[in-house]
Amino acid sequence: MPSLWQSIKLALRQGVMATPELDQQEWRIQIAERDVGLASKGIILAVVFYFLYWSNWTSQSPSGSSVASVSAVWALTQRAVQYGFLAYLALNIGAAFVFLGMRQVSFRLVQTTVFVIAAADGAFLAALILITGGLKSSLFWLYPVLILRNCISMAKALPQISLNALMCVIYAAAVLAESSLLDPDRAALLAGDDAGETADAGGFPVPFGPFLLRIALLLAVAAWCYGLQLVLDRQRRQLEEQNELALRREQLQLSSRLAAEIAHQLKNPLAIINNASYTLQRTVKEGKTITQQIQIIREEVERSDRLITELMGYAKLADGRIERLNVREQLERAILQVFPPAVKYEVQIHRDFADALPSLLAQQNHILDIFINILQNAREAMNGRGNIWIRAAYGEAHAIIVTLEDDGPGIEPEHLERIFEPYFTTREKGSGLGLAIVKHNMELYGGRVRVESELGKGTRFILEFPAKTLMRLRK
Image (cartoon, rainbow, N blue to C red):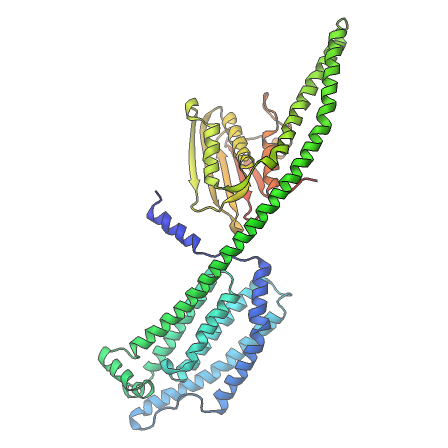
């Protein structure tokens, strides 16, 4: 049973949407910020400029000696918003240049600009709400629009959540700041008699119920937008997985037909050669040297026949089934095959598996062959005695990184570059095919394998399985 902390981590991972591909992120920013955003922002800035400098759009300060100090603070606040608008306008002009030339600048700069300008939009809208009535300002309804825009532009989960949470905080600060600038009489004047009674009775500077209701509404909009993206993201990944599965099956069928044809073309001539050499050996008994040569021919033919038989195994690929494979389960299966409990190897297996690793779309025998061959090499190198560390973790772009490390004698530096070559081996009884199969099967699914070793300090194999892989046929 998983622990509470593991369950929490699993729930958090499942609740984080995958980051779209770079071209998808660029497309979303282009639509939201450049194609639609620049034109809309230009109109909005022109309207705000007019109302800030040529109209009485903002709330009027109260009259009377009892509110003289409030009037002075209110005038100062309005003046600060007008100056702030000029800085906000300059920031938007700079952002417009970045969005118009987004193909010529780094994408990191574009992402940073999106975050900064979105935060600035929320802050300036809060300033407008501050001088147009606070809680009673109808400009509040622009915040759900900003949250929706943020969800489109910010494709990564953490920046998006942070930005939308900031929108709620900024709005709450604007409402509280607006009421704190006024005395109770001014608060009652702008918010209404009921608001004044609420402030007097509860000690809260704004009507508590409507204030919480609006904050809850903003949080609900942000959560709904994020949840919708999460659902769409999962549907997209399922569709991509189905397409990838179908493509792999088709490639397997092509690979199996090719392998069967090669095996058929080579196996028949080898059978004829083998029969002829056997007959010749029986007939020519007097020529010892000839007999020895014929024996060599037979041995080489038998060896070639075994290799062709292994090649024919590819003809059975179509009989195999592409399925979702749990990496942890496959590692455990490989450990049981290489270190069966009945044999009593003096090997300690140290496991470190991350929770909720993505599934691999592959044939089980391909993945098992990778793990088994590496573990067998480790067992033989350590003479059945030592330690093996097996780790499975997340890599970049949702890849899976599997590390298999032993504390054996290590590999000679001059041999490191050749260990994946077919038939290269440093052991007397080794075939030299185990690690070649590892490399072949990894490349078959678009993965990579690396080896790190130092004499006397063991060997480490690092396997990287990409999140999105296509079976690749060798040319």
